[in-house]
Image (cartoon, rainbow, N blue to C red; front, top):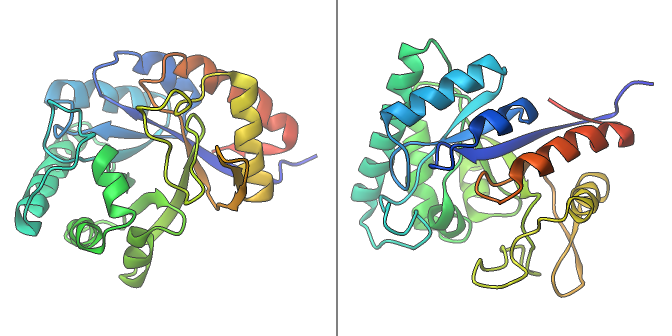
Length: 247
């Protein structure tokens, strides 16, 4: 019987974990840190080569320029300065891709930038303007129902809704703060249940026990989750049993 549902599984990579060789065989797309919160030309080149070897779609993972806080703190910047910082990060990755004869597939903002753009129109507009400035038909990975998704769609940018396999959600669809003990999911069976609910029912069970509508076609496992490669391998083994194909 043919597989009925196709999804994408992505991971944030090039962030200094060094586990990319373990992750790539189980990914269909990846988001490469391009110098804002982590990464440099050397790490980008290494990860791009791995991605190409495994036929994994390549995305840029720009952030607030803040390696000290790993891009997980909001940095007060003017729209012009943020635009310049993001454009510069993506350009560095594009140069690597050009030298490796690879293509940029999508943009996924990182950390605090991702979360802020989900609710702040000013930040969302900057990211969308950066994407519009690139002479490629790029997709944007972003949360369902977010401000940035609406802004991007209005500007004709193709949006891919993203959900998180290894993170718990609040009822407003924000992620539970990493400062909380229950923020990160690591139990494989629990993660499978979490992902299946989002795929088959388009709902997420929040930490308050409420089920909330959530649409997604790409699912992220963070590269810095301690057992990320085990989670990814498990999802690759189990999802086809439910007629779900990773591609």
